[in-house]
Length: 193
Image (cartoon, rainbow, N blue to C red; front, side, top):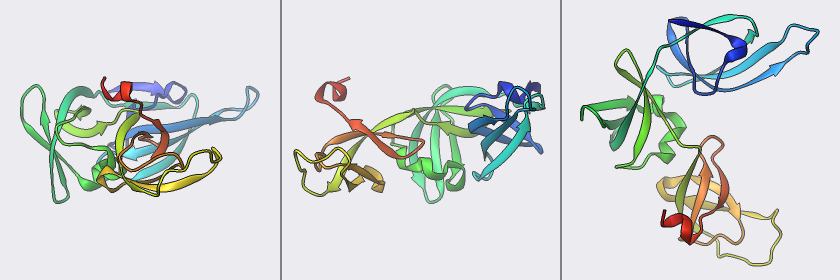
C-alpha cells in the first residue's frame, strides 16, 4: 500500500482507514501559512456506503489503496442489488443499494460506467459530473419570467429537482450528479452527439 500525505489528497482517491476503503468525495483546507493547516475531508465508506467527516494534518501520512479501474455496464436492479457486467470478463458483479446510495437516480440500464476494484472486488461505480435526464412531469412552461423563479420537476427514474420556469414536460436537462441540481437545458445538437 502506498502512503500519501493529506496535502496530496485528490477527489475520488481511495484511502484505507481502519482497514476499510473510503473514497474522498470533497475536501477543503483550513489554517494559514503561520499555523499548521488541516485538511477536512468528506469520505464515503465503500463497504457500508455511509459518509464520514475526517480532519487530517497536512503532513499526516495516509494509506492509499491500490485500486484498479475498469469499465462495467449496468444490467439491472434486483431488489436491493444493482447488477453490472464487467466489460472485459463479462462476469456479473453486484453492489448493494446501500453501497450505491443516492447515485441510483443516475444509473441507466445498458450504460457503461467506470468502476473501481480493490483486490479484484467491485467497490464502487463512478458517475460522470453531469447526466442528461428527461423531464417526466412539471408545471406548464412560462416565458419571460425571472431567472430566479424555479418550479419542481420529476425526472425519469423518479428524481425530483427544481428547474427554471421555461422547462416543459419532455425536455431533456443536464443534472449535476454530486449536488442533484439542474445545470442547463439540453439543446437539439447536444442530443445528437
